[in-house]
Image (cartoon, rainbow, N blue to C red; front, side, top):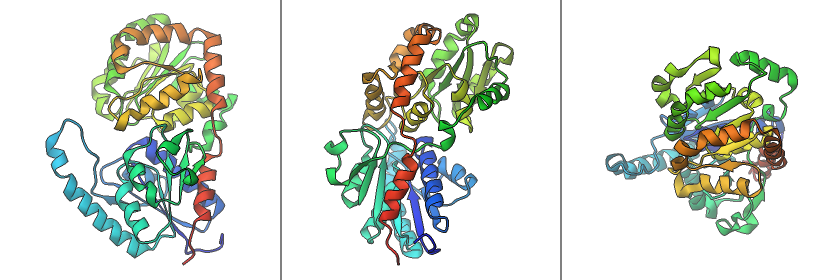
Length: 370
């Protein structure tokens, strides 16, 4: 099979970095196992995947699709038309390209394509990143051959005989940072190794409540001697870039491509509780304060965070607690070496270092040779 140049694998999904980067990791793992396979992507127009996937070297087709937007009526009026358009285009793409297998990484972008692929007899495999599954994967589960998960007890939502525990895919570099690379990361950011580093990330889109909390207490962090790598999100960069102060170690970014460098030198991380972020933090064994987004489907980030808190692997604060509790929680943790080491050890123990490869292997088992 590895010599067959006619194998086509289509990976569908996206919307956020939590879907896009695992999808790319799976694609790279498939390439290692089957170098001659063709790999294409299907995503949503205007979303992160339409930029990041081509930069990673893969072709991508876009669908006119969106998720349900809470508290906004007008955009949601277009959803039936977007869904119809996406299903029709997906039907055309499946017939045109004749994929051997479809892989879904979650998010609304994966729904139309994988539904059509399954309906037309293409085997599909799903990757569910969260402790509480997204609605798209729950709707697709009946047509899936296998469902790769990263948390236990998901047989509440999926057929038990389809579930395979693989963990969440992250890039290999997250497992391989050494002292030399860590030293280079300090130089890259222009930060001092003898002062603690706080890495704040609201995910690929940024998180307004986290930004507000950091802004409010910025002078306190500077007085404490804490350096900050602050990924505020593209939508907030214009508002917060004025706070960049390299002399005091305050760095402000919209998005950090080589996020492993930021994690490498972080003494403590404040982060949304997306599945990819957690998998990266586990891979690198970081002490983390998780701040689940309350705006995601069925509050799945809270379920992700609670699973770690239960194992004494992380702390958790809610958005509404940030104003009064974030600074004190950071201060009481970032200088406490024993506390940080315990969190880091327990996070590292939960890491799965071959998730992308395991998902790729499961997918390749299901390939139908045309």
